[in-house]
Amino acid sequence: MAGGSAADLGPTAVVKVFSAGTAGCVADLVTFPLDTAKVRLQVQGESKALPKGQKAAYRGVFGTIITIVRTEGPRNLYNGLLAGLHRQMCFASVRIGLYDTMKQLYAHGAESMYPGLGTRLLAGSTTGAMAVAFAQPTDVVKVRFQAQVHQPENGSVKRYSSTTEAYRTIARVEGLKGLWKGCLLNIARNAIVNCSELVTYDIIKEQILKNKLMTDNMPCHFTAAFAAGFCTTVVASPVDVVKTRFMNSVPGQYGGAANCALTMLLKEGPSAFYKGFMPSFLRLGSWNIVMFVSYEQIQRAVVRFQRRLASERFD
Figure 1 (cartoon, rainbow, N blue to C red):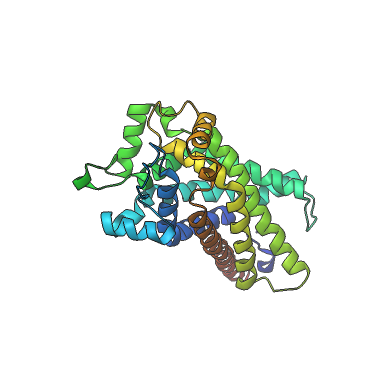
Figure 2 (cartoon, one colour):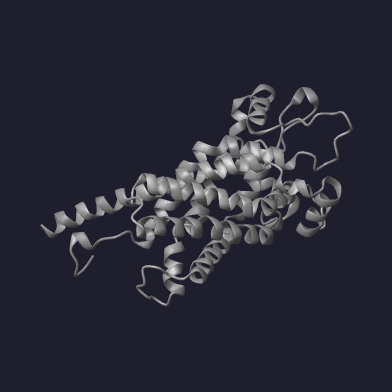
């Protein structure tokens, strides 16, 4: 940086965007089977209620994973992974990477170490909405892939054979608006998720450091990320279930997101909104831990590299 020393270099917005996208991909690679199990549990029962005496195909997180491995093969646990990685590079990089930038913007450039809660919530809502605006097609394709069951012997075949084919088929059959299906619902969901996730992590980490309970290292990041994952799951689960159902639905199945929620309530009861809660928590808790720890470490690694380059230049 011009006019400064190597020691003055901190993570820039570009570094944060890159670090967030990369950390999101790392977290998806680690936790994707849990996300697939969550989606399968959430869409279970959406077509018709189970007859009396008939057991659900999927029961519990690990039961769902075992059933998928046994009936479809282990590869199907990673159905939609490519779309998931596309999503994180577009999505996490914006909603997480630009959070600090938006926080400073809403604080009007104030150098206060502790911005107000309103400023943080506004920053989280903004970056969540921005991310959905251009990453929604990747989320639609990811959910469709994860929800599809491949059991030819039972007459169940895949809706899409590849990620590229899924994008093309959805655009051709449902129009471009099909790729942005559930966009408004997803904006609402991600405003909630971003506020719960980022603001919780931000505040808990800040309080840990402020009260000198831990130093700014992995145990601190782990603790804050675990708490953020739990809070996010509790708050966002109902919206997440409706989002998954609506994005996975065939054209005409629901009149809209509100109709989807009402249909779930009438057919399956209030508990339907917390279907897949345990896999959601396991997934979000582990995803937050892997993502935030990776995010902090990748940022530091890039900054160290920049400082080394700057030191060489100053020397």
